[in-house]
Image 1 (cartoon, rainbow, N blue to C red):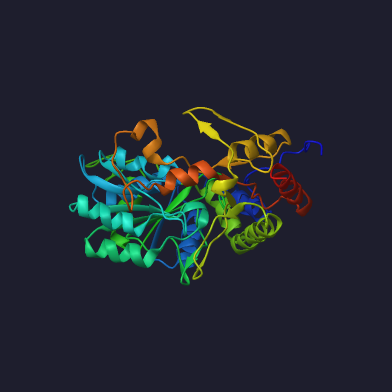
Image 2 (image 1 turned 90 degrees about the vertical axis):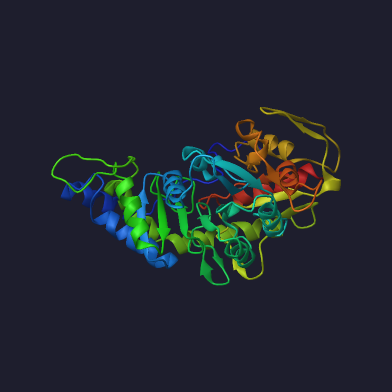
Length: 394
């Protein structure tokens, strides 16, 4: 098989045409800054879809997370329980407000925060009042258990649904469970505004605070007056036009993502690998399809902070070999998120597991790989990805 001339991407934006209509409307009406009809429509459509009372469109999901952490009242020195296996954008905003992250291990059923580890963390740090939870790769967490624990300890839940817009837990949309919730519209997400995000909450007063903070916290005065710190975080009406058009295709994108996941599941059947799991009473958005190599089928794989090496053995493989071989065919993959407790920047932070000596996140990171999940990928292209992977275990 020859390398593909056109790269097969992990996940890239998919435009449909309506986006141009709404962007043109912004230009034609000269509302190209941080006010306009596109912003109003996008905020309304997302909050109605997710079913919450208030929404604030912002420049990035990270900006939304920062304002969520600020609204939750995190102060310098405060400890905050955070998902460990995630992108650092989930946890960095705690540092912005001077807090300290305590990382919580995952469980194998969803690859998300383990309720048992969270409860154990509260036993060690009973004064913690904020939990930041991410739904990995669009798969909902064990929300009933997480919410019960947060309620028992009087803790605020911040739900990072950056990767999971349209995923549901027992029929309820992710992004609606926490006191403050966040979705992302980054270019690789299930829908995009090119870059952007949104804060979602049922606390309308808090949403208005966030809206003010996002526009440099200007006071209601005839001149520029400020009594508190603000940020330049508001989404533009132009980018909101892209999102307005994308929302029309959200369910379509979700359906296509599920088709990709199911094709991998069937195509890789019989190999010593598993697909990223989910609970029976949830419906992921299948943002990224991932595999986990069985332990007894793993060749030796050794990673440093910046590179890796592995051995080659007949009938066995490892994520880094699969990644490198697929890259040689011009096919993009990506390692599973490296856990935060392994990141040099957070190496001195505490990490809580459900049981001593057992670390789920390190195991999934070592054995897992994100596969191409671009909705523009053809069946033939995906079949080629499957064929290459099957060949590595032959």
